[in-house]
Length: 119
Image (spheres, rainbow, N blue to C red):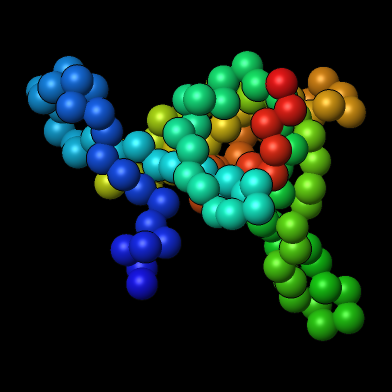
């Protein structure tokens, strides 16, 4: 079952050929997308696009002094993609500019579900 829900895929052969002299295996993560069915999308396809996303995070639970999982839904523009090195513990992430301000924030793709590509 884990194979069917994987968020990783091998990179294109041309990309792999260009990386032959590196010391780490090249893999490109996919982002979960939802348009009535679960899809996976390459983060680089979202560059300069305005998207509606659901971001999984943990909020403070004041009653129990712990953290509870929650999903934040917002619209933002993808201004950069940071390609991570999983063997070094760095995830691929998107630099998002929120629609309601000038704030920029990196968000790991493993915490995102793209709900809609708006532009």
